[in-house]
Length: 291
Image 1 (tube, rainbow, N blue to C red):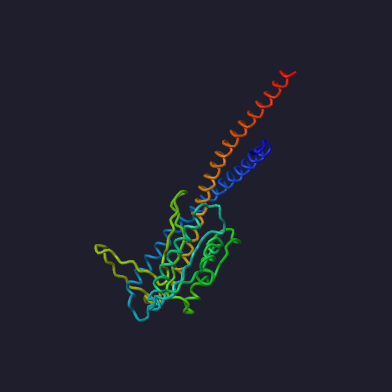
Image 2: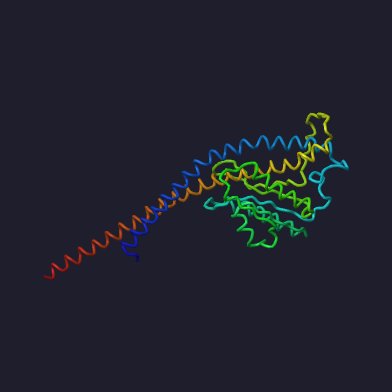
């Protein structure tokens, strides 16, 4: 059985841990609001960008001059998985849930005889994927030095992805990230960004005809690369909000668990101390009676 001194040290250590987790919870809560506002502000623009491009792409579909980012390479053999995760841990299942979704997709593709490559954005995803797919990771980007996410960060990633596509290194690119819903709900998401998936209109949707200038193919050649950067930027912002939400929830649970441990440890300490005092009293009384 541990001594009273060891118990006091253990209680003090748990209390110190509780203070740290409480502080981290408060920091995550303060940063979450800004991250959530940024993520929610990016959604309408990203959705509208996809809708506009889908409208233009519908008119250009099947055209011999359609950009490769829309038409694809004509093959479906090599897949690039762009996996965006966090730079830090202590956020529950936030990072591992994204990695799990990407891993399951990779294994399903390889089972079909496809070749899979990884582009990792974020340290945590890279560390987890490296254990199974080290030779298949073609690039890793670390954003730890970035204090505040900006569109230029997404543009840099998009340029690297597009350079590999232009070099013929892959046929399909899928983006993996966590969509923020609430503090307790973050949804791992997979979104194909190359070639663009054009959503079909509902049968009863109103049909509208547009005339474009310049021509659709010329418009798409400029819009499609920008759309990839926009979708990546949205994913980074969603991830940022999801990370702080998951960390806030995780640190809240850790603070509660530390409180419960302190309560139990204090009970054990008090009982042990009481038993020790009782034993000493019995020894004193027994000695006095013997005299």
